[in-house]
Image (cartoon, rainbow, N blue to C red; front, side, top):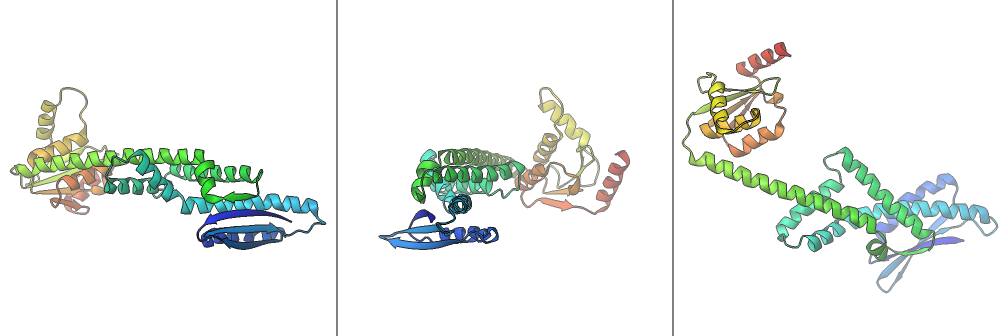
Length: 304
């Protein structure tokens, strides 16, 4: 009879559930096992035993190897679910203590977004697989030399590579947080410039073509793009015209009471659209199917 002992501080119900779910697969491999729980002085031990009998030594050894693999899978999933957020919080509080509590909470949210791959990016998917495999590999190595493990101690002292990965994720979350903060301050500044100006035009119409260039019309739907380009060119020293910057600069100069964005489905730069909506809060109207939109769409199709 061979066994593994998993020590847990406090309640072991979640650990036991992860192990039970994982070991159900052993029934298909005709491996007999048992799971028992022992409580002593505030700590709990879960005993996972292979019951293949003393007369089947070779089978018992092979079954024990399989048991270690499945237990390692179960504990890796448990560590990721139960320890990761606490570890991230500890890293943030230790390495970035100069941020206030609200800022640290925002950084934690961004770090969790990365490791849970809420944005469904390929890189984050690979990272999810990598960090789970790192934990499984460390558990397997540990069980090669010992049949007894204390989870808290293992996580704190045996998973340095995994914790290093989490530190890098926190660093990335801090970078994202600082970029977001810088963006919000930039938006506040632009909004201030808009608010202190008297509108030069009541309404501005904006259309985008297939080349991602913009057509700007006044409230009477007369084109004023060339005037905007000329004023923009006078302000920049040299270099090619950045049409995104041209649009934002022109809108801030005009500070219109209303901005109608036509054919918004053709906007490739969705961040620019969000920036305009943020800077001119309450003044932006998104239009998809008016006469201008249809004419603009037809022209774009002809030129493709």
